[in-house]
Every structure is written in C-alpha cells, then in structure tokens.
Image (tube, rainbow, N blue to C red; front, top):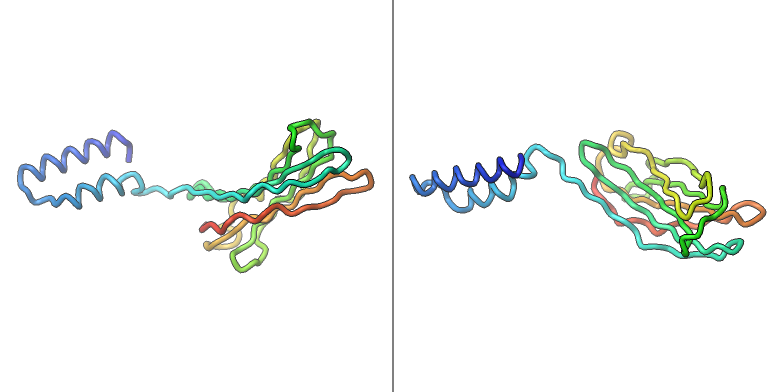
Length: 167
C-alpha cells in the first residue's frame, strides 16, 4: 500500500469515525501501522563484527559476515574481506567463501571460493540466493572464511558468525 493510499485510508476512516462514531481509535492506529506491511514481506539483515588479522606478506586484513532476508526477493549471505588501509592487494591475494548454517549448526549453502581478480582493496562473496528454497524456513547464520596469500599457499581465517536471522 502506497503512502498516498495509507493517507487516503486514514482520512476516510477518520471522517467515518466522526460521522458515525463507530470506528474506535485502535482501528485507525492499526490501519496506519499495519498498512505498509500488508501483502509484503518485511526485509531484514544482520552482520557480524569485524575481525582483523595479519600481517601476511606485508598486508593487514579484515573480514566480516552479513546475512540478508529480502522476503520474496530471496535471502543470501555474504562474506567480505579487505585490506585494513584500503591498499590494493595484488590479484589472488584475498579470497572469501560465504557459508550458511542453520541455528543447529548444520551446513546449508555456500558460494564457493572467490579471489580478487585484480588489484583490489576488498572483495565480497555471496552464498547464493535461495536459503529458504534450498534448506527450508528457519533461523540461519553466516560463517564465512577468508584466505590471504602467504607466498607458499594460503592462510585461512574465519569471520565472526552473524547473529541468527529468520529466513
């Protein structure tokens, strides 16, 4: 319901309540408060704290997890990694994988590993959308993992978990 429609509904109800005094104030308040959510899924999101690590080959890094529920538009997790000074790390120096688990700790979904393709100061990897269609409705969290090139392979760090979010 658009803002203009809610406004028009409010004034119609207000006029009707004045004319017949049959509309209680609580009905008017409910129409205004609940009107925007009628017929729509409510979007929500959560994020973890930032985890700092390094230095690895002269670069200090941070990582962070996110979880989004956009209702009918889908739901997904994201893991982001970046350099602490926003300096551009060479290609392949940063990697991220966003993993989704249900509140019991059972694995649900992953985006797979993604590495910075160019000189970048940060990258994000999504878990893939459709948590609910893949794993069912319930409470979920993101626990991403990031990697930093150490000259002879990669060193890995987990990001802090997001709080549980109902999907």
